[in-house]
Image 1 (cartoon, helix red, strand yellow):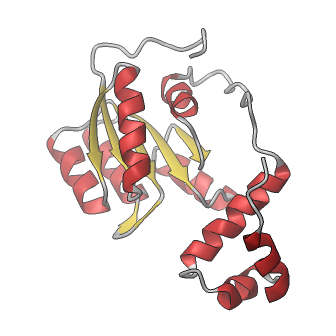
Image 2 (cartoon, rainbow, N blue to C red):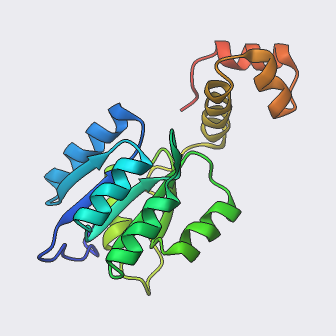
Length: 183
């Protein structure tokens, strides 16, 4: 962990909302090790229910969930607890969604894959300081590969549909998908 990290404070409650069960469990364990008292939710409905019943001091919400938009959870938390520090995570890093998340009340916005250290730094950062650059940023090839994989999964692993959406030749996409991920 970095030295410029702020103390968590007395209220260590943290709500994690993500529909990726494996990621949610890994992140919950990592955040518990960092001193947070973690509650998890795998849907907008569950996230809003927890936020209404027990508004957390901290929250990490995925933007796109199976039953809706994670920004709905952010709004519920903001209504119940205006001082909460909220980070929005998404695999679809776009300026428009980042602006929407911050306008609704998110403290920060991180693109997936973000690790527990990045998330902790975002949750505990001083609002007046800029976050430090990542120590091990992904290569441009890796970012491209991650994006292609994400679109491929969203298209139910349909190569033709993925190629159409990425404006790419189908055979080129097949070659990319057959290779291992770049470092």
